[in-house]
Amino acid sequence: MPHLTRTARGGSATGISVGFGVPGFAHPLVAPVEWHELTRHGTPLRWVVLNVANGPGERPDPHCLEAAGRLRNAGIRVLGHLDLGYGARGFGDLASDAHRYRDWYQVDGYSLDRCPTERAGLPEVRRTVTALRGLVDGAHIVLGHGRPPHPGYAEWGDQLVTFAGPWSDYRWSQAAEWTAEHPPERFCHFVHGMPRGHLEEALRIARRQGASTIYFTDRVDRGGGNDPWESLPGYWDDIVSRIGTGISE
Image (tube, rainbow, N blue to C red; front, side):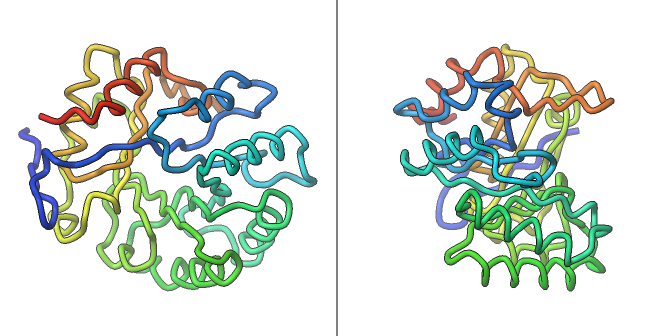
């Protein structure tokens, strides 16, 4: 199956500038190297999701407060993790989590994980996003669909995660045709289980499909609570250097 190539509005797909969005590392006590690495000078980092305990936790965590503070001081957006459960979580629970993230960690916006993709889910997502924007001035909202959603969602998220999954799927993936109507800055791709030797191929796929925010890792999703995003990929230095030099096809 061929990749669907697309051209970004106002320019060619080969001119896309790529940067990182970090879906969420493990707790700073478990992954201290990861959190410190994020503030390394020259890392093309756009935002980092803070996921304390599948949400903000029950009380402010001093280690997470310190990590979030370092990122903010470095000019990096910190986003609170909100699990929508594909529409199953109630608005009150989401609002409570969002308030705690704002009050405790002074987040710059929110990542809405397991966001619905169907048209039927739009009204509730619209309600949630409207409330979040009222809660945090200038909030950056990432809708974590994991696959191409109904195009109506593009009206409500600053960015949409249109792919999140294994390399075995990503290398044959296609972009939804409607995404060509939007600039690459609107879309994110997260890929796990990707071997080192495929970095350039993966970057070409992201550019061709018009996604300028990425996170690639060789960590594997084995299920059972294992999270492939919790630690740095083994080729972190390599991919930072490749993106930092602004390579293109």
